[in-house]
Image 1: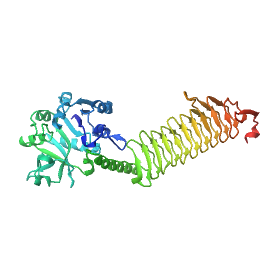
Image 2: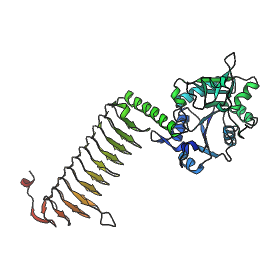
Image 3: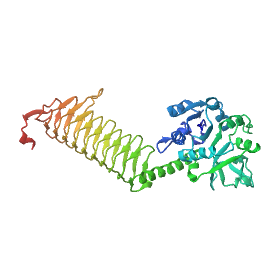
Image 4: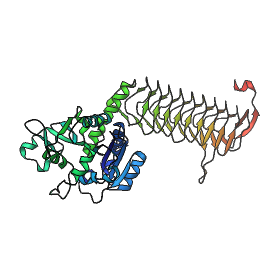
Length: 452
């Protein structure tokens, strides 16, 4: 049986009090919509249709190639929203999975169980329910004496007896496609002037058809987001889930409650992460690393056996056995080769530091290429910006840059050259040459004994 998913993402989300569409608010670094799309794909859906409305173009852009979008305009309720997908899916699928894009904690495996339950069900629909003491505004699931589902009653219309019901409608369903499209045409208009998808349950019962309910094993999956308070609750659950999976995969988190790892981050086994460390965006960390405490890594690749202590790494690439920090900063385009050591209060941007480079503290390297084995003394600055343009600096292999050297770009420093402490280098330095002074001048060629 072919299964399509319909994700409801048209709502305005007024209670979020935000200019950003509700489904684009992030949970663990990714939009709620991203989590919902991943779940339906993991559930094995052949096609995905996202119903958009408020800020449709922004939501459509976020969907990208992960699904097709249809616009609900005007927005007349959940039943009307699902109807918008009929033209795309009519005759193309056997089952239709319907869920909301503001429920980022629903797992793909849960939705897969829902689909499998409906495949084995003779009735037209299987729905997800949850047992909870806090109703969170969800509709109540009303059952008959035979325990069969009779109806879903929205909280606003529920009697005091119905409000006491602990079984709640999660808002995820799997329908027989042919029955769904026909039933939606018979959904009555509510007093609010909307067509509710939940009324299809009453239609099935009226026809004497079976409505099957699958109860969530993990009640936290039912957390939907309507306010910033709900968003924080979902964030906490997702972070705990992510951290637990990394620990099961062989990563040590010294204090999971104070470790913030976004969805999609990959970490190798035997890596140890200390508290107050943030791993964000498109980040990968190798095996046997030591990160933190007080470290932020964003959109970066860190190779095996690296140490990053109390530092910020953004848009950077660290090869194996690199050590940086404390209080170092790698900016976009920084590439540190194998065995680089970078001390405290150093900064690198748009630069390559070759294998074994040692960069002392209080230094800035920008728009530069540094050869293998070179030593960058404390206080070294590449003066790469002239007020209009940035210029490159090329430093060869086994060079010794003395403390407080100013390298005024564009500039080339040859292999095995040296600069004296406090030098201001404005002209290219040939290989095997010592330069000193302000401005720096060559005073002699270096013999092998000078470099020993």
